[in-house]
Amino acid sequence: MRMYRTGAILGALLVALLTVTACSPRAGSGGKAPERPTPWTTPKGPGGYGGRLLGARWRVDWVTVDGRNIDAPPDAGAWVEFSYDNTAVGDYGCTPFRTSATVTATTLTVGTDTSGATPDDACPAKERAFEERMRKILTGGPLAVAERVDDISMTLKNQRGDYVALQMLWPQGLFGAPWQLQNLIVSDATIDMTAGKEVYFVFHRDGTVTGKGGCNGFKGRATFAGEHATLYPLTRTTHRTCSREIMSEEDDLLDQDPRTFQVWVNRGIGFVDETHGLEFFGYQFVRLTGTPPRPGS
Image (cartoon, rainbow, N blue to C red; front, side, top):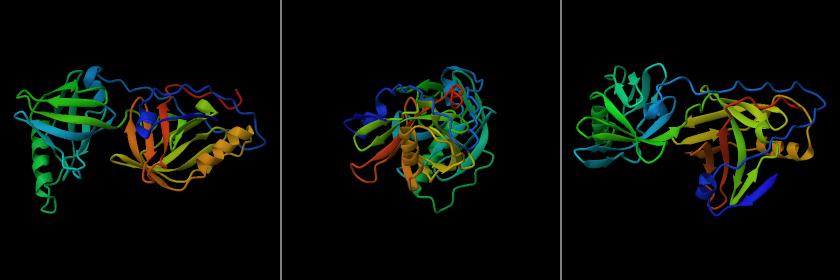
């Protein structure tokens, strides 16, 4: 295990992802070797900025109407997710919706909402007003898709110049893809994982998580809600023996209490728990686009 000092939690998350040399653990004394995850490749899309929308979930930060920015209320929770099957699901802030969505490299056309209920009186007036503006822009005809600052912040603009500002909540391939755990973030230290690509998580939409801790396979639960993920204790599914260092890291990885993290999207995903002041803790993942080596190879 290699440890690096960092200045602050954001610095640890925004630095370039560290390169980790894969470690091949020694064959163990028992247990079936964990199966390798299926390689994940980006499904075929239109390319361009429109293609970046697909398969990801986006938070709505604000809308601009007649040149005036209107921020989303802090508790609005407005979001949208575009799928490769020409559909979109989301929440206007008060009202969930499911509708059609046609994406090209440069444009997005969202169908009239067919499933969302009318917001009830329990929804605060400020959130209802924001929802109405967002709904009107999204469903008002073709929208030009453009990058706002970088590839995790986009704008959807109509012909009048009104637009919706989006920030990525969950990246493409969050579910079903193997995510290599590159390092742990403990207080002001960044700790590389000795086993490299042998440490990965696969998150599933049904709330389960599977993967490998460096030597053994594991399973558990991991749930996502908005900007937060909750990771529950992980249980070994195999009983192999590797080097002492790898086994120690695996023990530490699996022996964790349930913990809720803030999710950060960069050139991977970061989970960070800052609820204990400076004693923060987190994970930095990068998506594996190929299959990790077989154990012992």
